[in-house]
Amino acid sequence: MKKVALITTAAAALAATPVLAKDTEAYAGPIFGWDHVRISTDGGSDSRDGFVYGGVIGVQTKIGGAGVVGLEGEITGSSAKERVEFTDGTFMELKAGRDLFIGARAGVMVTETTQLYAKAGYTNARFTYREGVIDGVSASIGNNFGGYRIGAGVEQTVSERIRLRGEYRFSDYGNLTYAGYDLGASGQRHQILVGATYAF
Image (cartoon, rainbow, N blue to C red):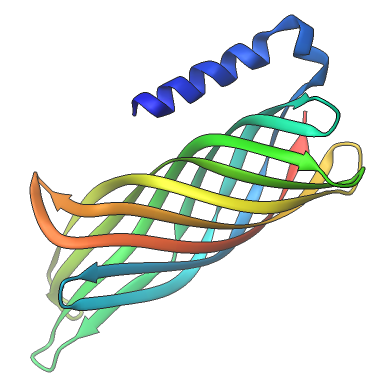
């Protein structure tokens, strides 16, 4: 969390600098794509695919002739879910929920309209476990897991304020714990997203 605070402070100071104000812009837009969640234990691993959807908001500043640095935040949801139904009429289910991200982003303009970029930061995802009777009584518990995310992508300018992007990213939540207890598992996810942003 200290690293996240330092990144946030630095980006805010950069955006507020009068000399750079003319080269600084804010942007926001929708993102969506493929979500692949994997849970690993000493006995093996299991994974599920789903649809990820949400939005991104950020601020960026031009540096040098072709460089860009900034800060991005995201909130997304996912349809990734694993459900097992048993012959005795019961079931168990694990579902991915909301995911929050904040981090730094840096890019370079390889042409006048095409930017290659990389990003890194903190991610916090929620997963919910539910079990019970099929079409009957059930109980669930949810927990938030923090980790890091790294990614890379390409952004294409289509007008003065509108840009399209495609991005791959990897998130690692480390060893999963609940109420202070190690669950004996680790969590990761791979995502491929597309989106559009509008610059203010």
